[in-house]
Image 1: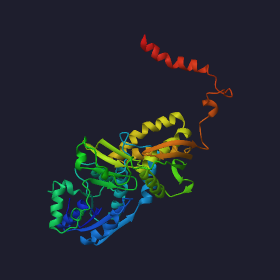
Image 2 (image 1 turned 90 degrees about the horizontal axis):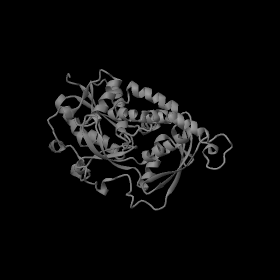
Image 3 (image 1 turned 90 degrees about the vertical axis):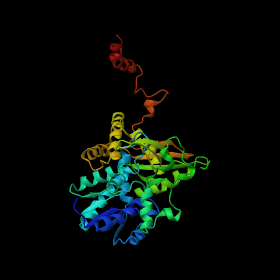
Image 4 (image 1 turned 180 degrees about the vertical axis):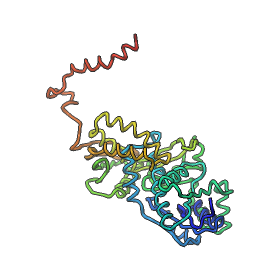
Length: 399
């Protein structure tokens, strides 16, 4: 790649991206523009502008993208019931396409030569950032310092930061021993003692959820109202998508809901142990499935279950902007036309318990399902022929 004049850096204000900003200026003698997306990660974005200024950055973008993130990325994903390998709610994966999109847009606006990210060469995020960027601009130039520089560990970065008087949380006693990522959907924890899959994480690691032991003994009962597969009201109060997640995060966190400890298969071929807190997402997923259970035809529901696994892998592996994901989304969104109504949930000591669901589009028939005498719409003798027809191939196999 030719020496860039101007680079747009995805900047968090943490150790890695602060060192990268300085390294880019030293290696390429280029102008660095920082972009920080506020997608609900908390106080991190408040310090990003100040830290970037200290590094000598002149153009700094800090944008509140919480509503766009939930409405345009999280909600469509939850319509699909996408959970990677049955456990991971894709909190980091789903955030990368939006950040990449804004990087590409800012690069075009600023006439920058390249974009840059701080993902390591071992992880999934490098793939997600770059596949998204190339899908949006096939000619974009991407700098991935972890694949270029001589640093081999975060200890090297700390040493470099101190040599160059870069303010880092290590020196202020604030740095977590874990590699963390956070947004309105989740918080992830990797590294440190978690690299041994046998060791249990310290209770102090969890930042968003109470322990089950400390969660209140009194349950909370809540209702979620869906319209075409998306939550529009919480406890009868209309809310924006981001506000729904903020409120559910608070309720779930109080009740110790949303923790998981997983060994997952990275796209690059490495098994990785991670711990996740997905408070609102855990409630939302349970409620959405409950709503679908009474509004979707059996075969459509089963088709969606098959597609969900494929869809979750596409997001996990970085193919949000792929034609196959977009086609799947069309099918999934069409399936949600009838997914409207109310779900009632009980939140109690780590559990999300469905205790009611109703819909104007309900396919549930009490008359058909009752154990008592029905109106005559179902003749139980008909089941005999149904069973015999379906048993034909099994009988033939046994002969």
